[in-house]
Amino acid sequence: MYKMLLLIIVQSFFQCLYAQAPVTINKHFSIGTYGRVGIARSNNFQYPRSLNLNGMGSVGGRMEEGDYVELATAFHYTPITAKNDSTAITVQARLALYTTNGQIIGNVNSHSYGGLTAALPELFAEAREILGTNWTVWIGARFNRGDDIHIIDQFYFDDHSSQGFGIAYKMTHFSVMFPGAVDTSSTLPPYFYLTIVNGSPVLALRNRAVYILEQVLPLKKGYVKLMGEFQRLGNATSEDTTSVYNYPSDYGFVLGAKLRQEMSTKIEGSYFDVSLRYGSGIANGGDGGGSKTFLTYGAPNLETQQFRNAGSLAFTSSILWNINRSYSLNPYLYFTKSRGASDSLNKAPDYYGNLVFNRKTDFAIGARGTWYIKNWFHFLHEINFASRKDGSQAPAQMFKISVAPTIVPTAERSVWARPHLRLVYSLARYNKFASQNLYSAYLAQSGNKTWGYYFGVKAEWWLW
Image (tube, rainbow, N blue to C red; front, side):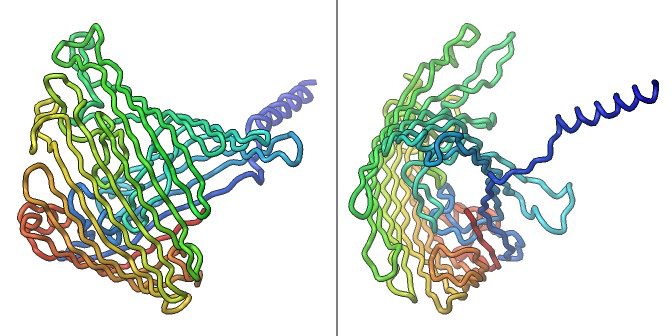
């Protein structure tokens, strides 16, 4: 009797264990990736920094970008309705890894990962064409953005990437995003304000809501996209907030239009696009090489403690011209002009008394050519000019050329073929102001120089 009872208990235990931890076997799974990796030298630095100007990110060319990897996993659900149901249900998560301080892979140990950053830029659920209708719904954090100028890594028009939800009907899309900053060392308002809790001042996150309406108007070989945004920061008033930090509510608007048109060439895939966007008030963002309007730029008006007079104008244009089977040309033009809410033409204090630039003008023009010497061997070459004027000071300027003999093992004659195995050489010339004021990450690393260079081997890949 005792042995029988013991056997029943053991059997029940394993049955419960199996029921709680089933083996995962399904065919509704996909994975994608984007990444780049390499090694380089410059002026005896094994990890040379970007040659581009401060505040412009990859605008001016991205050949020197550091190691980075993304892994995006997706789970796909099948509806149980009729077989011709077009509903597409996806839950997607994306992991991103990069470093701000040297090597993160290879012959390193756990103590060498200084500066390593891990992020989940995407985690969302989406249902498209629900039950065969034209309705789409998604909830979560995602790369909520459209086309980019790839050679400068610029999502130039409609990058709303953050956390929120969206509803689409045909070509009309409405979304609400709730971007938040978690860098509590930030002094750039109006993300943070001080509250007094139990007699002690602490930093608190101030909520922002971004309401976005987008309409796509199809053309014969392209489309026009119209976009409007309304952004609002809630009133910071609370019983525990002292009057000096009692910021009022604030808002901003964005209006923009974008045209993308296919070009008729012997080789398919040619196009041109142009975009114009204006953001006002707290929606005047678009700095640091990015274009997110909710990253407010400049200093506030300290009399009103608001950004009502702030604004930013952004204009871009790019072309991909597949001239023939041997050559493709990809030029671009980038321009932004921004001002904060202060009347200052140079620097002005933020909410914490720190001086920040209240005016800026960014300009860049360049092109990448791809010469298809062989199906498997392409010769990439770039020319870029970039200018950054902060406040009333002289503009910092950089002229850069890059060459990259590239092995393309997929043997595809396309600018989008990947993976790329590149030998990269970049040479930059800085004007006097940029050189003397160390106006690039490279100059900050190597010192006052007129010329900067980068030499390395790089790989870039994607698979979606």
